[in-house]
Length: 396
Image (cartoon, rainbow, N blue to C red; front, top):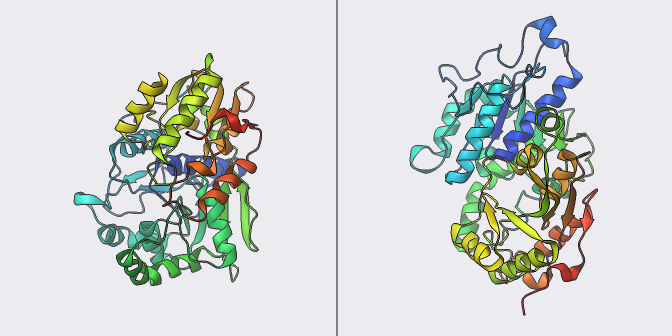
């Protein structure tokens, strides 16, 4: 490519934003001399949103380590579309500050709740989406992202991880199915009516994301997926995270990673509490790293039942673990981190262990896909220790 592509990234979660930074770092590693030749780094070619300034973050101007920013030709202009919950918004602001430290332009666009709407975001961003040569998205299942992809037309598309959902995205795309989150059930008549009304937008997004007719499509992932014909697959090995943070100091205890499977209606709350208590006793767990969606009531119950220190991370766990201190063993239920932490913590001596979800823990409302999907997350994890089934027995 003779000139830098105009790249726009649409992110809605801290993990998506972290993975955009990883993708930009991987791009720069392949084109380290472009900045010097063209003078067009990510902070030089100006905002894609005319008249809309980027906002300073709470950590702006601070770097995780001494040293210059990594090379960043073809770096994305990052649009943050924040959710409404405070934990996610706080983490997003902190990762956005790291992105600015790397020289990227970051724009915070409200699109939900009282201060913003999806249609308002589309009105603001449509022109930028239309003229972008490459669009990076973190959640192809998101209705907001699907709506914003409608004006994209001929842009090259890149999907970066929003966790294990990437596995289901590629599988559904390959089967020609409509895009639907693995844990979502059919819902009632109103939900079905809304899906029917939204079907044209969803169908357009699926066609945009399907490789065809020579249009480039890339998946940048830590997940074990098989690329479809016409799809470029690149491995996210968390090289940016490893170059900027750590190695961590290791503690003697074991850390347990929380999950939002209770909040999404997949796992019964009482069964989950029993499993956490059993893992704590068997493996000497001292700290519980809460998922940003876990409720305060649930976390209080876990602390009281198992005597755990509850930690609310202010950054994605890959960054928290890499900065340290962190336990010599990290235990997790089937989740994104059993795929990402082995990359982020390579060479540190930390063992990542995964505990299966017993089918008896699933709620009656769990989707038919839940059991197979969670088993697949565990079965395909690399460089992890599988815990015996009795490590987390079902509730009696």
